[in-house]
Length: 385
Ligand SMILES: *[C@@H]1O[C@H](CO)[C@@H](O)[C@H](O)[C@H]1NC(C)=O
Ligand SMILES: *[C@@H]1O[C@H](CO)[C@@H](O)[C@H](O)[C@H]1NC(C)=O
Image 1: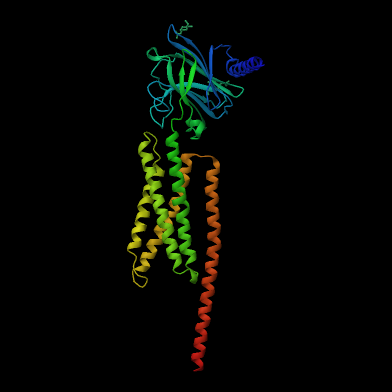
Image 2 (image 1 turned 90 degrees about the vertical axis):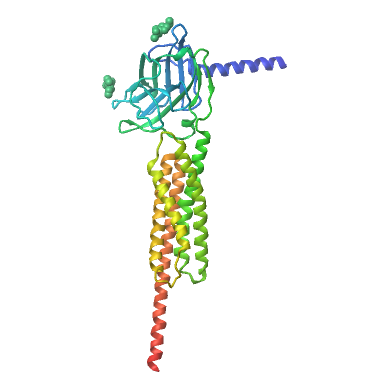
């Protein structure tokens, strides 16, 4: 009985592995080329098919990306001396306006490459690309460098922007598209994520800053403006305002520091606008904290000017913070729901602001009217007297 089960199990396993091998190896190429080896890559719906010729150390390969849009570029690369994007010796397929694809080589030397055709560190005697039923295939012959057969490989897909290649997305699949390939034995091994810990740091930076600069600081300003009008909330509004803004500042500085560290670690990619706004924000917010220490007494003649200064700096910080959260979201390019969530929070704060503003005006005007009436009443009494 056990033996029969074992045999059934073996048949099942061999069928499973056969069918998964077939989905890669039985693919019929339009050029009728047969490739001896095939590896389905772990992410981004990609497959690598090749023939290895040990006599002249060449590889004829076909890199296939399934489900490519007609406005997407596709790339595959060997990184001979390093890992990941920097140093990638890249074959790239780019859509033409008429829907066909052209292919060329480009050597990537930075994280902000121009993706213009350039020579690789090894010979590529032939390269071409085509799109067949939504599969983009790059065909190429590589002369493998220095007798090696095992390399780090990296592959990628991204969208086009007015005929130019736009940066790829920064979601998990696009960051995990690295592993190694050995052309002599067909083994591909997982290379893990190039940017796993870096991505975690980027996300931490994003959450800290969106919460502190992007949400807490506007709420602190609202507390000051709209609680002040209620007599019962005096002086509580002041302490709420100070507590909110100082904790926002504390968290914000931590988030800011992670951002500065990320910026100095990213060799190549420069997010200048985001970085510059960040530095201005840090300077403004620090000024704002110290301004509190220099605040003149309410009856001081300079208090009026201090108030103007405090308000204009405060509102500038809020506006710049919101702009920079969106700048950051564009760089981080997380799932759409995060941007929507932040927009939702802003809309809620906006609605509360409108209602609170109306209420404040109502209360202030009513109070004024009452004051006038009491005043008139007093005058009347005086008149009688
Ligand atoms: C390498 O060798 C193979 C098989 O011998 C041959 O078909 C191929 O044309 C050669 N390639 C180059 C670039 O010399
Ligand atoms: C499509 O456009 C490319 C260049 O833009 C050209 O080389 C190619 O011949 C065109 N193909 C067809 C089928 O029109």
